[in-house]
Amino acid sequence: MAHLRIGSRGSQLALWQANHIASLLQQRGHTVSVQVIKTTGDKITDVALAKVGTKGMFTKEIEEALSAGEIDLAVHSLKDLPTDLPSEFVLAAVPAREDARDALLSINYSSIEELPLGARVGTSSLRRQAQLHAIRADLQIVPLRGNVDTRLRKLDAQEFDAIVLAAAGLTRLGLAGKVRHYFEPVKMCPAAGQGALAIEIRAGDSKITEAISFLDHTETRVAVDCERAALKALGGGCQVPIGAFARSGPKGLLLHAVVASPDGRSIIREERQGVNPQELGVQVARALLARGAKKILDVVYEREVSVPQQP
Image (cartoon, rainbow, N blue to C red; front, side, top):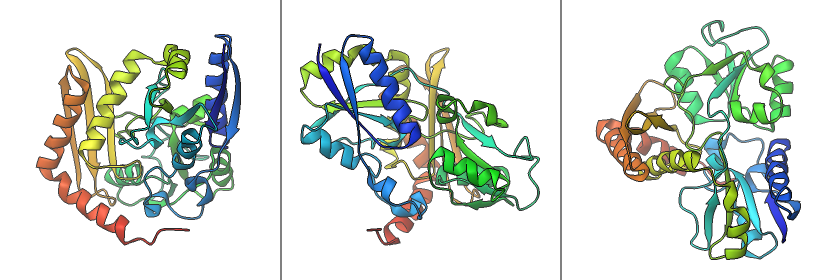
């Protein structure tokens, strides 16, 4: 059996994910080590993610280590992985997905409807900001960066009336008990790939492909391929106001997707069924664009371009 080197970000959640994969590989007889790699997204902590404007901000340095042969596989949160991978890499496995929903956490309030007028809600996501504003235009959305523990400390210090985080990360860290409300995808559409992990390796590495093939979960892979096809067709990255969530339906896959202006005043939703995940993703994206999503996204992308890149 091989010794496998996993590359991962250093946050508590990222290390949980890497060690989870390491444990599954060890059960197959492999020896495994985890190498922490600091990414651009980890280095820039005082700027809202949407203003950084860098695709691959949580993956670039890990891919560089993979390319250099310093690691054998990378474990990412799939929603952080750009839809266009460099040709030298492949998405070799997508393990079974955790809860894809977004979750509301609050000390004093049990739902978004209970929040007081003008309540401060923390999130680092334009997608969440847009959909929160669509639900409650009066809310004050405040940028919230940092790992899960940092965000929870700020909530405990009552810097915010509520914060919104991915349910999957909270579940993985044993913090699901802090959730006050789960948003259903039709109300707060998750990011493409949210709740899923991505195992990235060098293209053509048959040894590693064989070692990790058991990790690929067919149902999850089909769903996230559909979501990522929609995201790619919309020209989006992980920090734009686009949501996409696919699940098994009576006629194959059911894909729900949304494009929204950051202020929530313009929000376009589309839901369709299909059998081919790639085709369904593209069809939904084209329907959104035809209904006005292009105008929304043009404004968002122009705003991203106008923000100076951080060092």
